[in-house]
Image (cartoon, rainbow, N blue to C red):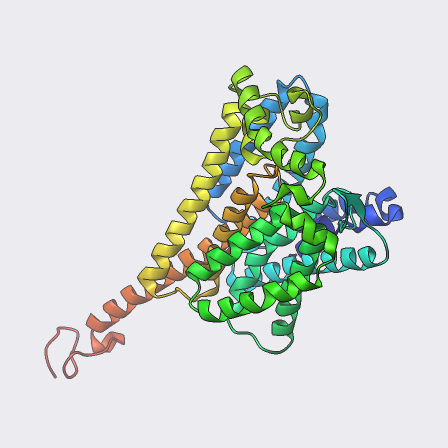
Amino acid sequence: MHWVLGGYLWLYIHRPFEFWPSLGNLQFERLYMIGALLCWLFYPGKGLVLNRLHIAFALFAIALVLCWLVSPYADDGTKTVEDFFKVAVFYVLLVTTVRDERTLRLMLLIYLAAVGLYMAHSLVEFIHGRHVFRMGIRRLIGVDSTYNDPNTFSATLLYSLPMTLPFFAEKPRGKLRMALIAYVALSLVCILLTGSRGALVGLGCLAVILLGVTRRRGVLLVLLVLAIPIGWSLLPEDLHNRFLTLIDPSVGPANAQTSAEGRTKGIVDGIRLWSSSPVTGFGPNSFPKAAGHGFQAHNLYGQALGELGGLGAIALLGMLLAFALNALEVRRLARAHGWQDEFPVRLSRAVSLSVLLMLIMGIGSHNLYRYTWMWFGAFQGIALHCLRLRARMSVEMTHHEEEAEWQPASLGGRPLAGRWDTDLRPI
């Protein structure tokens, strides 16, 4: 079952049915999911991993549907709602079948492998001429059509980078170590070639956060000092100018500055739309028409307010609160039992870092309906479940040992001083 889920995970990220039309005509993804659901129905031992994120995601789903139903632009939001529930179904399959650390580790590796294949394929196509020419530069895009936009593609890679940290912390050797290093290097190359200024800022934020939390900040600092000038020198001149517009807009085309200003306008328009419809907003994917300019919000917070109103804003806050409470519970369990270096604890920290990156990137991108919210939520929820099981077993073993300590020798206990009979009298 877990390999079946891994296959769908790859299909959803790489989306080969969008690159090869023959697969798309066969509705391959839909057929695969139907097969996965049939496998799930007959999968033995499945059960729901209890977590507060289930409630948070359910409330967000309710808010999304309600806002869609009353939206004057409901037709524009139909695909958004459908795609959300596709992700929700996969989320349910994950949290009901992945219930142990070993399988969780496997699913995370499959996720990284899927993203790795996706970006490697995209880079190969870019080398052979597949790209978009925008903002005066040639920009790398994904091989699919759903998430292939340069900014969206670079965000996919950026959000995945923290997921490598739980494995790096184990100091792997051999093929896994080489694969992880290649993954990070390839991600950096692809992000730079997209020309996404937001993703570059996200990389900078990630580096600063890691410098603040890692124990090996000296090594990381040396790598950054070496990598930044080398990487900059290898970039084409047009990308130099593209990234320099972050500090000096005059070195790039006028539309680059207009694009940057549009990110700020997204929150302003979102507040304006929210004031017109404070409860339900104007519905999912309604921002271009509702705002009147034909462009997406390019801002998570403006998107939430403008499209889902107060219901969506509260639901988003509920999701973030659930992520935070999970992280705090993981931290408490880790400190109480000395599990700071265990895989589920490291994975929970990585998820928290990715969520933080999504919030930072949300200042300049509309990522409210991204699948990564649910997928990373599933990873964190399962990691917490594994720690709860460990803690419960630890308490039961301690209790059992305490009982055995005082149990009579004739019943198999360990005597405190000499041997004792059933009446607790020395023999």
